[in-house]
Length: 267
Image 1 (spheres, rainbow, N blue to C red):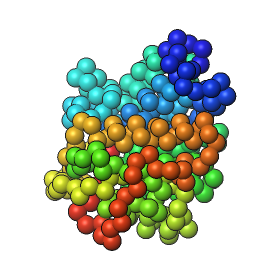
Image 2 (cartoon, helix red, strand yellow):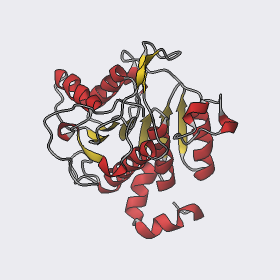
Image 3 (cartoon, rainbow, N blue to C red):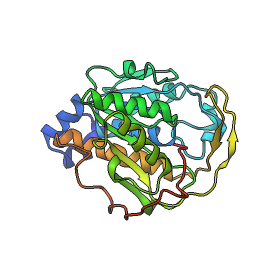
Image 4 (cartoon, rainbow, N blue to C red):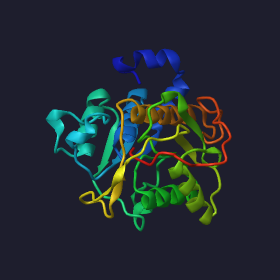
């Protein structure tokens, strides 16, 4: 971290903490509104190695919330755009690009053996469950993003263990699916406890299997999810503690018995 772009980081972090980040290897799966901001924040913090996984190309509809999305990048692979940005930010960061559509049956094979942290920012439920569960079963640190779609209030974003999530339909399904695999806690989760607005009816999405509801998104919610996830990962890397059990970055969510009106994915 001797490069001039890390001058202010060196003021905040001591040499040992800087070294831990420089040695860290983080995998970010999904480079939409959440994952793209998370990946770049990790690079700007000084993480030394990033594996970026996404099969998609930039679409015009991504421009309202996704970091790689510009009118000039429409049609380009998101992993390639993000890799170029990160190399321009920190040439010392090793960026491994995986342009592939993840499927549950093989997702575990795409996680390198030497990875320190897996960050799940994908929106396919079956694949999310497979990635999170297989990573936990391997003893890896895992963080997972729930749905930022159909939400407007940034003050309702919460960071907590999966067992403490509430008012989020996606988190409720994730908890149920993970429990079937013997996982009740230990997954750092970002979610919103804001009641979500209604999405459009399910529509077919080219190259993504079954029809899905189309969620509304706003410019700031997915990026905030991604930046908070990056902050949790950085704190874990420099402290060596468990990010899933450390104090939440914001106030704990209120207890609510229902998950009704919670938003869907749309990360």
